[in-house]
Image (cartoon, rainbow, N blue to C red; front, side, top):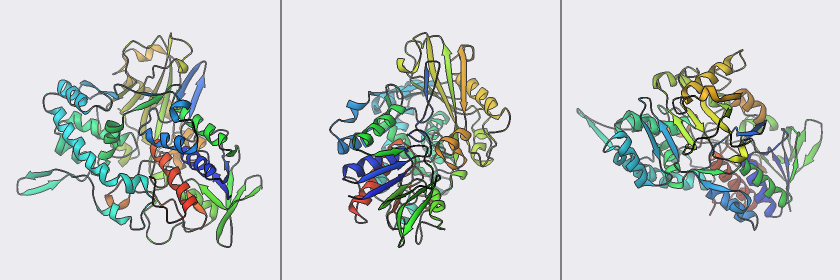
Length: 503
């Protein structure tokens, strides 16, 4: 039985902790905050409750596997998991609306044809076929295996089979997601639908590779899921599974260094001076572990460039407590697309929040999130520059942007402003304070292509016994990816460097 110290109680860290405990190891988790879950947070007030992190779950099979491998009770016995239908309603710049059925290709094709005109559904359906090919090519090396030593194969090869476009005397193929939308979908609304999946993860569609097509494919193929009581319930269930497997949690315990002995990770030191010895240390972002070890780099040789949190995007989340009941037939999630795509590009190019942002409106039909049926709990989310590019602490900055988000949301919910009892605005400042992510940034999933700039550093490091887990390490950000990261790290600890991935 080995002693394992885990730094942080995020979803990836807890997924690794539960699996390692089942393998017979003594696992202690040290979390700087007062609770678990990392970015999967919750805000509560006056009988209202809100998810402040992800609002929906994709690929629930990742957490089903975690619960099967760590105990007798399956995931569905621990949470109330429900499929959202429709998966999302989209309100486009020209006022066109469409609701897309969950995990139904025929239903989506029909809905798009009816809303956008004949042929729109077929073009989107054909795109999803190509996106599936990209998914099949990258699923295992990107999500289910430790990052290959020859990861350059993923960096150089574009897995999306873009259509060849003949223009004058030249043949061209789409290299970015925006080009896929413009050249293959031939409708600005379909292009906006496609690009919103990248924007939701803080990726610029004009620089994100065509392989980002796997992001809408994931929603189409595996559906969108919700947990009664909010996505925070998933964090609760994973935490309780860890406790059932005798994982020990120490909260309000900030790790200030990783100790070493004979060139190997040997434990952690806390801010209060406590030193906890360990045979293995599992930690969060590679940048953080580099600081905690005092090493210049955790990796030997050529590795994917680790993108600092300060160079990526964050989120503004507006929690709205509303008077008045949720109307019958209201959709769980609505995406209100920007009316000024060129301005929204400033989020990435100029580090400036959009004047007319794309806003995700989540309206769960969940009595557990409201004081009674005469009120409603609504969450608005938008992608914004991180603290490195925009001063969210400036007086009025958060409220001014929240006002713009509410204005956008009113295109989907007329009269919204008059229903607001109160609101809570959360910016990258809150993200940084609560999760420790530099700049309050949110990591995107790893993607192939573009010279490896969207790959994440490997889970193994050059320090024996030291591993990285979570969104800033392989295979990147997102709830499913966090669970996969935990599975990979547990496999590497238990089976050693010969571990070839999840089965």
